[in-house]
Amino acid sequence: MRVDKSVIVLFRQMNLFLNRELLDEKLTSSDVLYLALLYEQDGRTQDEMAEAYTVDRAATTRSLQGLEKKGLVRREVDTFDRRIRRVYLTEKAMQYRTAIRRMADDLADALFEGMSEEEVKAFMEQVETMGQRARRLNQRQERLKAQGINK
Image (cartoon, rainbow, N blue to C red; front, side):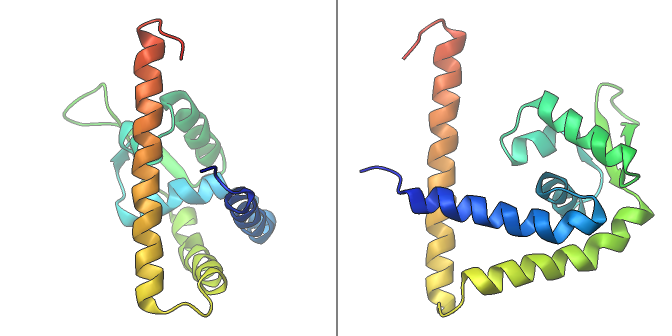
């Protein structure tokens, strides 16, 4: 069984929607992902944020630097462990919270139109399972690469 192109189309269309909606705000869909994590729990570490989306630390650092330049986050050294940097939302970022929530709701409404609550729940559980499997596959590939084994 192969991954159908419809999965790629769905991902691409979601990104187009988000980027178009965010154009006026000079934000990207990637910016919104990191802001959403902080809206859930402000003061996360950079490593926690990288882990949440299975992104390497360097990419997370670049994204956070961009958010910092836009005045949306500030990074601070942890008071108990100076090796850790925590990320906090600024007042400016808090002003975007409602607009980002509304945009996410609009996207979800469009994607799940005509589906029952049970169907949406089942779909989301399947997507979560597939995400976990894809993460395990990538972790396995990284381990093999680190061992010098090309597969």
